[in-house]
Amino acid sequence: MYLRVDLQEVPPLVEVHEPEDFTSFKVVLVPSTHTWVEPEALTRLAGRARDDAWRERLAAMTAYARRQGWTDGQGRLRAHVETVVEPDEPVGHPERDMRPPGAGTAS
Image (cartoon, rainbow, N blue to C red; front, side, top):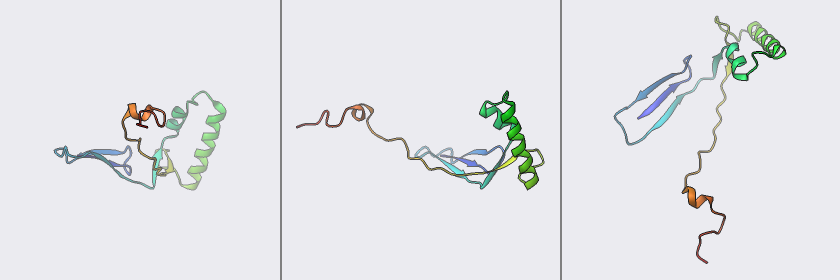
């Protein structure tokens, strides 16, 4: 089974596909080159609701984006989507991996 996440939708659309296949599991991302973000969400996520100077700078950025055509009818900002590929968590035996190098090996 897999989850299909369509990042072209706002909010992203998440669907379960092949729900009867229990032999594998994955997440499939349908990428987008941009997405829309509400300025209020940025303020909230940044923890800056009471920071007047920060909010003024965000308002200036939003006004610039509006002049450039980078906002939608709801006032959301168009943001580029960048994909970062990070290595998976190491797979191994936790107890063995916690020992110092050479520990537990025969000499």
